[in-house]
Image (cartoon, rainbow, N blue to C red):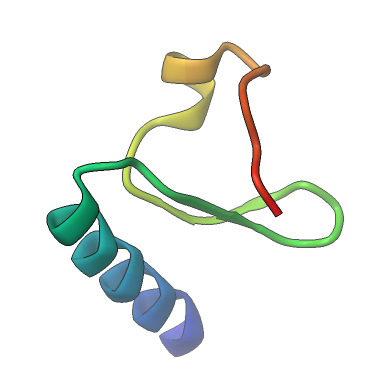
Length: 50
């Protein structure tokens, strides 16, 4: 999906600037784009900011 590609490019740019990993989730908690492997790195839990 093109919108997911745009999200992915945007958060990769933000990561490059801030050196912080990002993840974008839909309203059901499904990962749309991320700069890390959420299942591997978070183990299903972690800190989330809105």
